[in-house]
Length: 214
Image 1 (cartoon, rainbow, N blue to C red):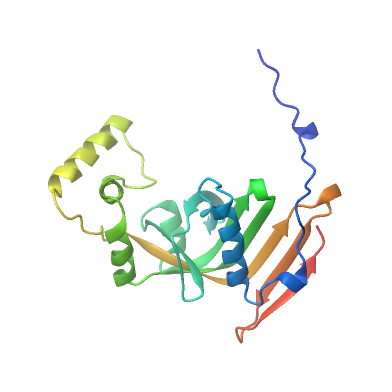
Image 2: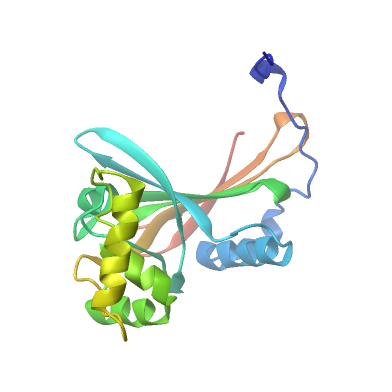
């Protein structure tokens, strides 16, 4: 039997270029887009993946989803409204999302409030999804208990037969826009003296920036 890894001794000394505040954009969303572009250029797998956190009945939950748009000062993602995260958010709710780009030794955490998109916006995105993904949005009653994978596949086939042509957007599926009130940019540095820069937005919509201890 293979011995389990010694977690206490697993470590990597970070050595990438640090955060120079003079190089940062005043708008944190623009800075996040620059880092996202770096991750995309570096060829990272799904650089738009983010871990979204919600709280429901005082129980926190996290899951990885994909950011699918940047509009009106916020980051968009799509989900089933009846899923655990959909129920936790409702029409709007507190939200946090973290992007982790291990190869670049970077992460960005966004905190704010998630607002449900207008139906027209969700329709527009659903229309450009691959047909198989459109059918899956109908077939999967997300977060519910299912009998088996075969039952899920049978439901998928049933939906495919139901919609042989254009697939309409399910009424229980659509998008959210995370309207940020805080961004934290983290860059790994040697000796665990990491760089952390936090942007906070005032009630007047003005962003201020501070450096945090690692």
